[in-house]
Image (cartoon, rainbow, N blue to C red):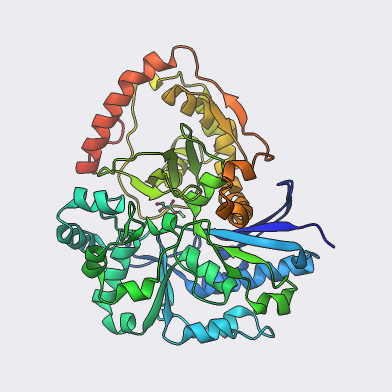
Length: 482
Ligand code: 5FX
């Protein structure tokens, strides 16, 4: 009998990735499908469409299904033994939503194993272009939601975040208000994560608490939908969302489609899928007191937190690996775009030049601060790994005055999903994720703070916060401030 293994998927903005790990947590297989390159028929840029208003950003839902067909075929041709997979879980870009047309559940359940899945599912979506996290077209829906809930802080107290344009409740409200007929034809609304789990389950998969916290709809303390939020967004929303579940839940066995077409064992279990940032928290094996920084299409900073106090900036999500605790998240939508612009303007478009310029600059940058500009509508692929390996750790270490450890973060959401698949099988027996992953390689110490950095940066941090406020309320203000 083949040795057991576990799969982790990541339905991210630009590509679909998969990792298989064995019982010793060694990566035994990795693959990906790049949407722009491998599925050019969809004509996406960076996996997305930016619409003419520059605010609406969507991705074609069938592209995600076709990417799944393609990656499974790639695995099959490379001889991957599907029968050894005991369990799988996955991650999806957060906040994005998928709209299933009435009657689709039957098609999903009975898809013929003779056909690739995208052929069976092509008529299943009432909205063919799914709004995703880069969308910022729902300002009016956000205002309405905050008003209905008695203000931004009150909404944050209930759901973990004030109203954000990319958050799913506001996206659903926009679809309902612009196209009530389409909403009426929709029997189920999934997040990208629960949509992906549904494809494997052959049934509508529930939304997990952690990714569900990115919707402005879930009461993060009670872990139930907030009726006032649902009512403020669209009628009949609760039945379209289904009941949220703990992130470690085993949802059921894999659909017979995959056993018949690829040879998966009918016992292979599907563990609830979650958001990419929550899955990265698992992949980075974050513990209380750690701060993780991930440079993806968006830059995110997140930490494990016991007793959060929701604020007007940032997000509190249910913790994906421990249902008693929480996760705080900051997301900089324009992170890589800003870095790339500075690279192009100041380093002739070369990361090596960028790196040299940065390492020749004294810590503290002689008191010059470059605050973020507030919002840019798009991001793009970046050389994140290089940035992480070359110079970023030292800057982080100096600014935060803390040692910086690195792991191969490029696939942390995928790896975290594979860890979560194992954890899902034992979580009911009160085994923690930390117990499950203790065999995994330890993060490597990259750098420690430069002596004197704390004295340099402490006063700058205060000024940075003040400047950030200024830029937030006046985005047109200058970029380099002395
Ligand atoms: C988090 O709130 C975000 O919007 C992004 O980091 C997406 O999850 C990227 F996929």
